[in-house]
Length: 386
Image (cartoon, rainbow, N blue to C red; front, side, top):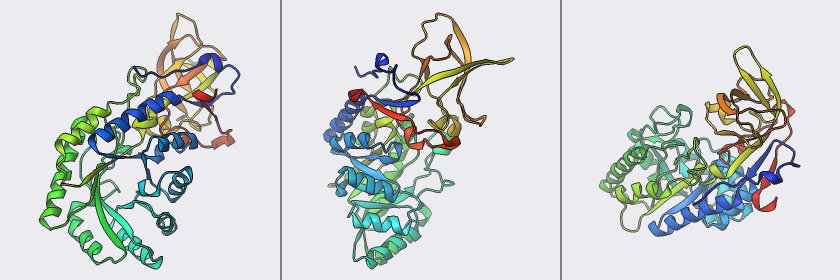
């Protein structure tokens, strides 16, 4: 059974805060994804925005996954790491001209386009550079992912994708574009989705759009169903590898692919989320009138998700031996009230110097860290190099 391993005995001399990555868990997770990818003949692209750590990217590339990028710099980064250009996809609602030129220069697999005007711009830039661009159009399926409002992407009021009412218009533009080859359809409903019925509904919408294209005599080479599979933030020890089999099986059973058509996915958090831990140390205990505070040396500059989304992360005291349990607000040192990792958390009695683990920080953790308050950049430790 897969498990997260934290070598506490080796942490004593390391300056906190730091990010710790369990490389063995990451490789085991990738092995499960690769096994199912091969069994179902799917193509899985890693959503690079979840974690752009070079070592993490190298391990993912070694596992044979492609890369799903949302900036020109991400495209250049994965190409530099060694990802084959034919496995690199460029998505994102606001691609600049320069980023499009960068992606074209690398001869990537294709662009996922999110507006009619974007299709026109890519066509123009491709023609000016004597290139042809492979293009998929991202359709907004109007499926509620039932996740946090800030990470849902598939509703009509979201900025992402092309509404079905504009499908005919974008197809006309594509038909008239001499620098574009229309290759596929792209969908994505949101992030941290744990309700499989949401993906079942997505399958239904994809089938409807595919039927519409078939009626128009239009064939596409691939369908990209996006990603969004969530992880267990509440019990990362028990569920450190998501149920990829259940996730892929929803699409395998319910999506109606045409003969020869490929199905693509773009998973990020589900791959790297559980292998990363933010390790911090208690600076001070502080007793308020109604609350007890533990002030850590890590804050929202190291892990932004709780401040950004009010996101939950399991927090554990790694060193306290006390049997006494107290409720604490666990906060950071940043001069912002939002710099808090959790309120009223039941923990063993904790003291200055205790080491703390903030779990499930492998996705949208290190990549969102910043130097607000001129904070130092946290060190990164890997399980196989400690």
